[in-house]
Length: 330
Image 1 (cartoon, rainbow, N blue to C red):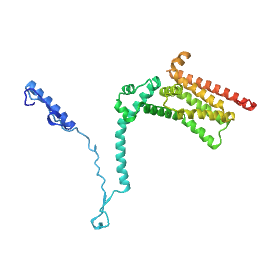
Image 2: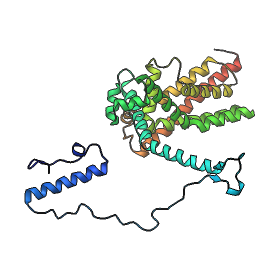
Image 3: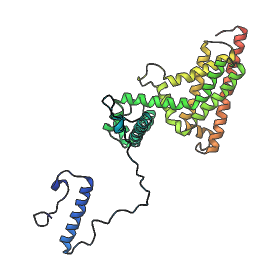
Image 4: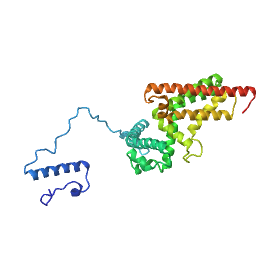
């Protein structure tokens, strides 16, 4: 209690800046004093309950690494008494500091960064670049504009980061088959038969990705950028361009022609149609008369989508092959 009857105070207002522990203790002391003042009886609660018991060995004591120091008999004017740490000791100590720092930063920063990217991806996919504000993003992410500005200088830089992560995620899904194409081509084994096998595998992988709910926002965002360019990219995003390029390469190997207009057009048509399965899940469910959220229905739809796509691709490739043999060029 202060010098004035019935007035109690504690913490920084009375002692100035102090530690959190001291502030908590002052709060408890004030509460005890108020209780005694109101009841006229001494408070029974003790402010000190002793240390929490812990098992022996709960803390391992280790000695600090000490530098190598010359023995007295080895010291001289042309030698440093303190030899410092050897390489392994320096490496170990430095690594511990780096790991602790990274762990501390990762707990807070990566979660905020990833949450901002995830929310931004969904809003950009649904509303477009112009229809989405940074205030909307930070509100839904449970963050603040100041936190967003730590990672992204502007909405434009945030959008680019979202697109980059989106492309990388979708490209990573198809990377195994794309690497296989590169390896076969490098070894000179990419022929008509292997090209068709890879077309089947590649198409199946894209169909799989198109029906994965975790990629819905990514594919919607890619499609929006293709259909309604945000103006943030002068050219087609690289990861998407590579998907077209690999399809085009396989088509040309299968037919036996290079640098053809029809292969570029067919690759565009195939990828666009496959992406559409991710864009209209509810419409697809209504057309099929089933709930597309059920795994068995989704599996059947994927099988038919793959079969339909491959039938269409093969029919077109055979037409172009006949035209190539007959000399009826495009």
